[in-house]
Image (cartoon, rainbow, N blue to C red; front, side, top):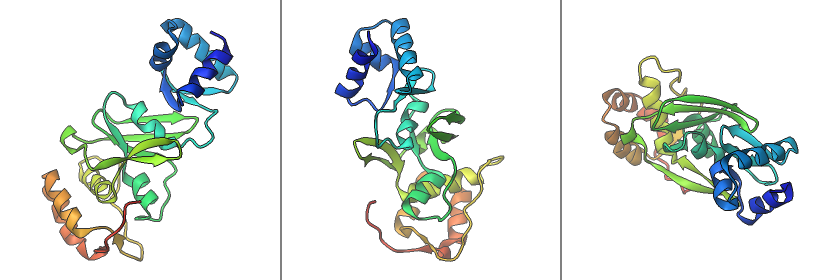
Length: 211
């Protein structure tokens, strides 16, 4: 297949982040031919590989790096959380220089042309509390603010964790106390509930709209 033919497939199917398997299915090419064709497109700076078998369409003008999250640890579920989600919601002021996500499988770091990704492991029963957010023509899974906050506390309190507990600087965290209480009980983790009780004064009870 020519480069023009492959680009036509990318455009016709609105492929933003995609896999080699997607191209095989849509084009009828063999595994080897599809990989070679994508490599040629990569040499022309039309696509870029972010992981073996996973590509980004560089012709997309509004691609958000978060869109890569569910592809990097597939087939296990993953979603944007921790510092990245909290910064996006404005709960914390610090903007992380890497993209933080949680996953139901082993933790992993990825260095890609579209950003540095840090995946932290959560037990399968804690993979909830997120929704698919729309970004232009794309989408990605992100924790709601209370779940992102609790994900961070839970992981930071885990022995030998590389994550640190959030620091309060100035204003209170804008979180829903009632939702935090309900969510925290689902973690079944005493250190998490104790931490919340000790820091409750630093959490505002402001209701917020979905962002």
